[in-house]
Length: 141
Figure 1 (cartoon, one colour):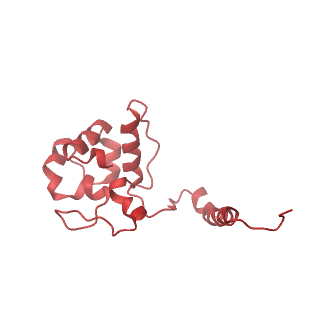
Figure 2: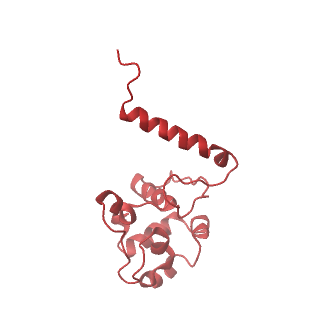
Figure 3: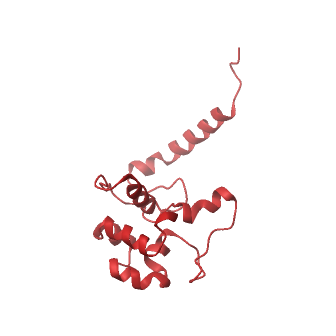
């Protein structure tokens, strides 16, 4: 009988529980806590995306969280973080949606906002998706 044998998944689960319990007071008080790296928009409320097809809804959820295949696949591949070719800075969701100068004229066509919160609160999901299609990044997200 294996009573006191610790398998890797039991150790991992115990570590996860310790991390969760240590952050629980912050979560209860409403302070945003990210278990990953800083999110592009950590205090987003619920957004109903049932009017979209599954692919579009997944893309918008990824943008809300700030983690996409394009911006975070380097972690799985153990590579260097991706860089924006035109701006020569880190390629992030915020950079793609709001900061990249190469996309500026297309961005102005779809949304004139300058903050992530304004983007997700005031711009329609169809406009955000159309912007991604126009800059040819829709399939990369």
